[in-house]
Length: 308
Image (cartoon, rainbow, N blue to C red; front, side):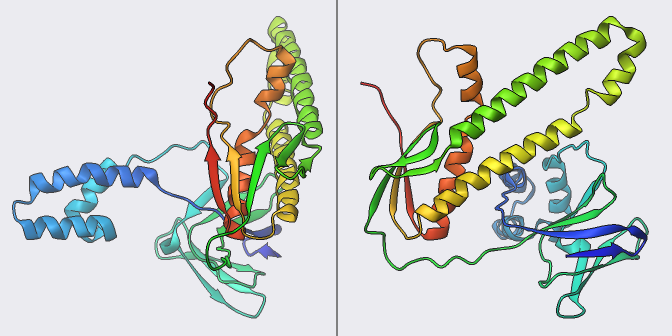
């Protein structure tokens, strides 16, 4: 999975396969506004039908439609300077040997592409992301679809699941899934609280001594180590939840679970209780069970609790 960069011998290339679903909502919203402009410009029904079909299939085929689409589609902003995203037309990939492929990406010079040789068994397709890490390595993130074997017919068994803090899920038959999740979440909450308290003290110390403030802000109050540790803790909790879910739900069943998107109402809790509830990762519990239900062909129903 590693090979040397041809223009930087000390760098390495790592290929990661990630399965995710991405929907460009901004482009779809831009198309709805363009339909009104199409009706204003085109007076003929055949011309309107042609532009609307191009808008749904290929907006770049017509020059006027392409210009209007670029005006309506507002691009996002990024402050990242160590990575670049390529669409399918910005690179080409071909196989050299059984375990080696050649990736050619567009560079700054028009007509000349940068050639990268990767140790990988599949042809890279779709959107890719090239990331230059702080360690001097070059990572290539690509998407890879995972085939799903869905069962025939609807599931016959039913399973009720309750979400919790001490354990991730508690089934209707008394089975605990992701038991011990509360210990991981509490340790994460306590570490974040302790770290933030020390950061606030250090920031106050830097403000009281202007001669040391620039040094402290540069060397001690950065976000690289903090973000890396938080990302590692979230990944550990995610793997812990999904590993136990995959071991417990192996066949297609009809799953019923509660909806925790509603805000918690009632009397005000203590500060340490609020900290734990803020780090509960309720969204990860729902995302995990949705992913497992998709992999096993199960049906998922979310029930909303309404007080009497």
